Length: 280
Image (cartoon, rainbow, N blue to C red; front, top):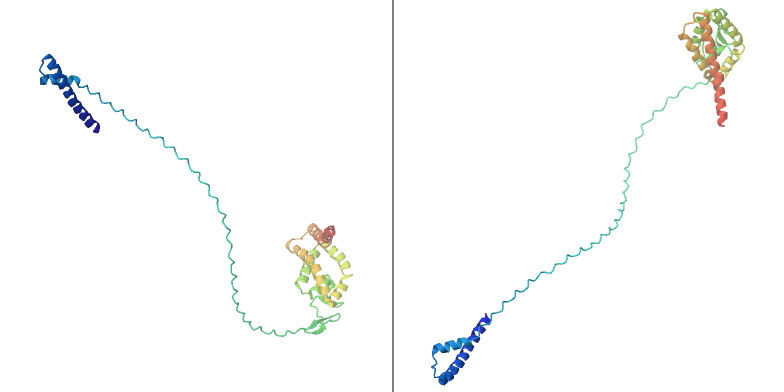
């Protein structure tokens, strides 16, 4: 805006100056040539002297400011956090529970045991037995007679078992009755069984009276004999569950029982002793 105003003022100033110059020149020329300076002539001369206005320079457009590329920010290196060592928890000491006072049990009154009448075992002589702390003569049942201090079955009935009688205390003991039933009801019913019993009695009565006397005199020995003959009595009880009505059955079962007892009393202890010696 200021440029335009200055331009206009300059043009007006030039017009004034040129008008004065033209007017002065025309007056000189007119006076010389006798031409009257008219206003039209003055204007024409003035316009010729006015220079054509120079074209205003077109302002060049200011170059657009290209924004500089904003540099991408470099990613910040975030340091990895160093894990802090977790302190191990210190276990709190567990307070030991105070033991509750256990009430003392009230002792129950122990009944005083009644004094037992301990009777000393009497050692009675041959032919007598202790009865109520007194040695009395042995009374044998019917069919039995006293022989060497023992009740022995009469010879007509086949004799008695002295060792078993002394071991169990009486001819009427169940073990002795079992042996008698096997002898009378099974063995003596056949010829081979009768022959076996005759041979057995000859051998048996050689030592049985002595062993029977030792049993009466020594209770510990009697218990040892009882422990020894118990397996044999158990094996003989098997004959109560079989029928021995023939000679062959008597021989078969008799031999089987003999072998069984030999195995129990001789073979089995020998094997045990042999095994023990290997480990010793």
